[in-house]
Image (cartoon, rainbow, N blue to C red; front, side, top):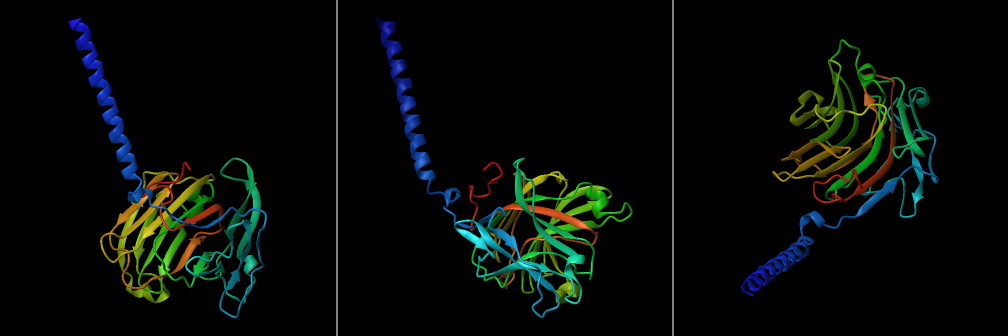
Length: 314
């Protein structure tokens, strides 16, 4: 009888411990729902270039370069042109207006095998040759009125054999950039693929080259290389960008590829001026021709999968 009482008491105590642990877990989860990780964010734009989305022919509005608009919708809630932060969005086909832009730059919506392994429609952008040193093909959100944090993701496909595409075996500064944002003059952040001695790697930096006037007084605020996460070649990969701009140490620029963090910069990333241009995706390099594919764009006003968390597995 004595042993039975001891066993019962031990059982009762363990059961109480179980219920106590369960109670604490419930309280922790309930309190956690109010943390910053679970901040509700808003979807600002979404498209996969499917039926209903189309490209207009390039046009010139009297300026020095060509423009080309994406129009239409493949989602009942969103349509092209993208209109976040009151922007005017279009391809800025950067060749001189006196030439036939199609000889230099070609944008097309094509059907190909996408990142799911199924046939889908995607945006194809190719710069065939340079007209000027600044020849490039950004899909640009222009005249922006900066309004808080942004998270941007899309699927990207770069060519095979990037060392041969971007370099020539003797030059160690082969590069291309596919994303940037700029103010009217004092700040730029850009994301690159670099090639040095046949090594392909990621690079990002913040500097003051936000317009042509600053090339003579260039100032590099910060830069990061990532030679650990491989650069996918001739295959789809997901890129994600987030930024919180600040003149203080709480500024942040975060960039991930296939869920792997490439850069997570913390610190000052704002001088004075607001962002007025976002090159959502672009083809820009000194080595041409260069082609890329883009699909499944999403834009939010914060991290949609939790603070500092990738949505690659989403």
